[in-house]
Image 1 (cartoon, rainbow, N blue to C red):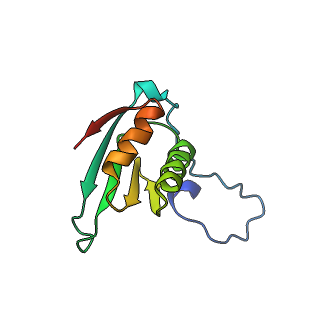
Image 2 (image 1 turned 120 degrees about the vertical axis):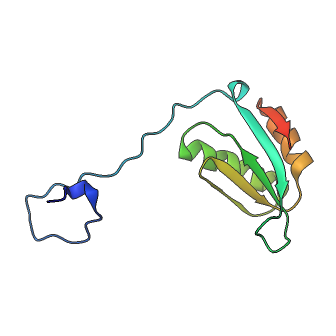
Length: 110
């Protein structure tokens, strides 16, 4: 018999059932000076459109989203932050590298 947390439960008539969340274990936040980020330009599988990738972030999902929000607002474009990488729409490799250096991150351009 499967355990409760082995499947996605939608509804149960059992009032004694206590949901056990599938919490992800978050990584401890590293200081910016201890993180090595890679900034690269990519257009593979994106129908020829260029995006700037920031990879190698070590920290919580909230910290990643905050950094992504900062980069998107400084560049004035859209993007996303998930799976320990930030995707910024357009060719902003140099600008993003400069912003990250000013924030104290170690940068490697690809």
